[in-house]
Length: 54
Image (cartoon, rainbow, N blue to C red; front, side):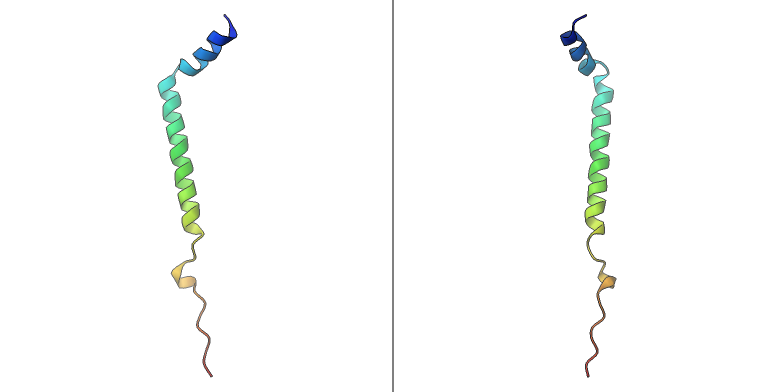
């Protein structure tokens, strides 16, 4: 068995499972990235209190 055939077989065997795992990995990455972007925004209740006027 030559290397070209083995390399091709590596990608073509169980291709559905590999495609599903790639899709799940992308979705998890996207969800983590979106959550991280949301958590960096300051919360509205975290605003500093206005300074007292004299």
